[in-house]
Amino acid sequence: MTKTKNLLKHFRTSMHISWKASPWMFLSRILFELVSISIPILSSYIFKEIIDNLSYARDMDLFIRNIALFAILQFASMIYGRVSGHIAGVHSELVSRYIRLEIIEKINELDLSYFDIPDFYNEIQNASRDSKSLLSLTWTIVSIVKGIVQSIVCGIILAQMLWVFPFVILAMDIPGVMIARVLNRKKYDWQLRRTDQERRIGYYESVMQGRAFAKDVRIWDSKPFFMKKYLALWKDWFCEKNKIERERIGLTLISSTFPFLVNIMMLVYIGIEVIGGRLTIGDFTYYRSISSQYRSGLEMFLSTINDSYDSEMRLSHYADFLSWKSRVPDEGILEVNRINTVEFRNVSFSYPNTNREVLHNLSFRIDENEKLAVVGYNGAGKTTLIKLLLRLYDPVSGDILINGRNIKEYTLKSLRNNFSTVFQDYNRYELPVDETVALADTKNPIDKGRVIRACLNANLDVTKPEDYPKTTDTYLGKLFDKEGVILSGGQWQKVAIAQAYYKRGNFMIMDEPNASLDPKSEHIMFEKLKELSQDRSGLIVTHRLSSVFMADRILVINSGHKEAIGTHTELMQQCEIYRNLFNMQAEHYRKESRI
Ligand code: ADP
Image (spheres, rainbow, N blue to C red):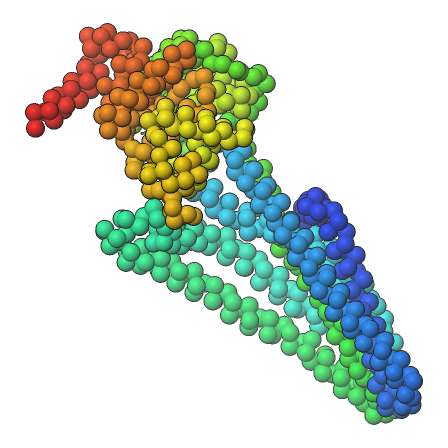
């Protein structure tokens, strides 16, 4: 009962999507499908007339008229088939695009924590595959109507010859339908099981083929290692697929034996009737053709009902995927145009699906136009703090206040608009310079002048044709353009900084912006950052303590706790961890300079 209810719900969704993807294509497709029932029945009838005329009357005029009619019908059916095939193809593409966009929208609506769950990736893959069922479900209705009409018309014609035939044929088709239903279920279960396997296979392939791993694969000669894993998984996948396929062939062979026997029996019966003079030779071809159309109508109808239950299983999954909710709800209504102050009040946080608290009861404040540096050992929770400020996650307890109001009161969009951010793990896009830099502000058209200025501020001169052959149009990478340039780690870091400058947010967040920079570039970067952020607040996470001098105060975090906050001089006096961190680095530089 619930299954049928769900099915009806999915039918509605399917119709809605098919309609929204293209109303015209949808309507014409239905019309074409329905009209196409009449063509083969009419053709069979005319063909019967031709055979009878040739066998008995042998009337030339009648023959020419019938053959002309037959030719017109065949030709019409040829054109019809191609046009309707084309419409169906275009419409299917539009519907799949609609669904793909829906999946992308959903993924982007969810918070980052989902990306830490392997099942999330399995579900994306399942949803992309299963969403195709939405497409077939719409046509299921058309096929059911078409199948019913076709089998009723042909059934009546057959019953006129011998009333029991349509019923016997129907009865013989039923085992096949039931077997198909069991096979569909098995196939679906297997598809769900294999998703994880297929994702792994895809991953190993990408390691062996992609640029990102090409260096490691060559230097460590790791291809045999990945190949072994790849082949082992592939073998399992292939064996199971083969097992299911063999089972399917065996069972369908058994189930199709019954209709086959009925078909032969019917031919024998009609043949006897023709020999006995009760039917004509034309009748022989006519009933034979009508019986096969009757069977195809029944099959269309019965197997489509089967398929629709299969679609229902898949679409329940897809509907579950679409119903996932972000754990960072965008429920605020306030707009924020400038971030003056930031305050963390007793903030504690654990990553979703983990038990370990990464931040404990953290409180601090950034005043108007203040620059705060955050320092601490690896894994102390510095980047996590930034993620909370950007609302990529929400605290488990405590509050974050922006300009004195809870961060959740603002719309996510307006909140994030204010930040210019450089992450440690910035991305390397295979795009031209201008598109890469302007990604930070996609609301406005690309401003090349602004791109060049942002790059110069980041100490990167993209106007030099000897370094960037097509200046701002030069691709950063060689995946799509052989004139693309390969940047060093430090240059990429400068691109990431240029993105932050291009955005012109009023609050700077920099997570290790100097990690890959040489000392000279680092010095220039901090000088520029000081100059450009005079009238802005900001937060900078850094390992290199040389850079803390550009900050007004420094927050020291240790294992998620606030260890101390103050100026460099205060911390050198009061905070042992800070003193150790600073002295260790100073000692390191002194050693380096002695070498
Ligand atoms: P830092 O920036 O100070 O080096 P992070 O804030 O990146 O440290 O990480 C703090 C802790 O949180 C680390 O122990 C890290 O392993 C853990 N962590 C970071 N990201 C995740 C995540 N997505 N899921 C679970 N734990 C995470």
